[in-house]
Each structure stands twice: as structure tokens, then as C-alpha cells.
Length: 211
Image 1 (spheres, rainbow, N blue to C red):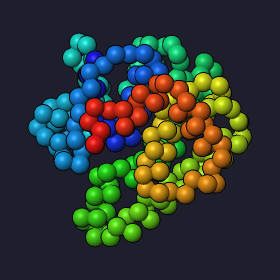
Image 2: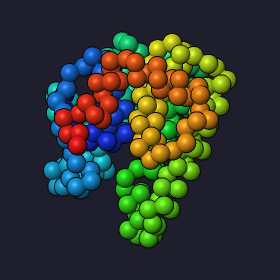
Image 3: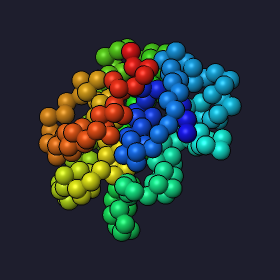
């Protein structure tokens, strides 16, 4: 398999974590988002969204959208499972994952921040305030859900899809100096994840295009 991704892309980071947890080998193909390589004709041929990650399978078929890619990997390589065996558990894990992937990330990804600056003329302090506000809203909700059902990880005692989404978001929050002090359960889960080799090997600093 080939993974077209960028070391700082949180959506790419999610997929790298899942691949590492599954023990699946892949070829790392860097796409530099800051340089605009995602807008190239080559990537457009791979993904209509002009976004990463893109996972190219052994037979040449390509998958886009990190959540869909991770669920595909979980269905085709079921161990270790990234979604619980029970319907309620799966719904909870998907809900936690979607707090990050659907509520926080869409408002704070690179192209949105660029639009704020270049089109809406937001200055750097305003852009950062925007970022920190939406991270705070999302992670406070995440923390509240963890309080309802505590565990070593986001759901139970093993990493799930939710953790694949949470960890990259925390990395980004730390980059933007977000206040994470009121999130003890969330940060405990993050720390538990980062003790595992899969998360360490998938993190941005471990990527070949890290700069």
C-alpha cells in the first residue's frame, strides 16, 4: 500500500496510527501541503478533494477521507479492533472520533486558516484565537464524555478509532499553545496513547518529510 500524506496533517496522522496499530506495512509518499502540492494535477488524479490522506491499495484502487480509510482497515484487518464489538460501544467511539473529525478539525485545518488570513484578512492573533476557541469547545465536550465512562483510553483499555483522532488533535493544540489544563482525563488518555510504539512511530517527528 501507498499512503499519500503530510507529516503535520492530522487526518494523515490518524491513518498512520491505524496502520501502525494494525502492523501494516506501507510506502510513505509525502505531499507538502504548505507548498501547495495537494493542488497539483498528480494529486487531483488521485483524489478529487485535493486533500490528504489518500491510501492506494495493492491493486491500485484508492481510498480517501481518513475516517473511511480507518474503518476500511478495521474491516479488512480486524485485529486489533479499532471499534468495539457491541453496537453501543461502536456508537460511542464513533461519536468521540467525530467530535474531533467533524466538529473541531473542519474549522481549523490548513485551508480554512489560510482562508481566514488571505480572504477574510484576519491577522495572526485573530487566527490563533479562532483556532483555540474551537479546539477548546471540542475538547471540553470530549472531556465530558470521558467523565461519563472513564477508562485507560478513550473507550476501555485499548486504543480505538477515537484515540486515532484524539492524539493528532492534541499535537495540533500543543503547536498552537492551546490551554489544555482543564482536560485531565483527555490528557491522561493522550499520555497513555503516547506510551505505545504505534503512536510514537506515527507521530510527525518520526515521518520522513518532517522538517
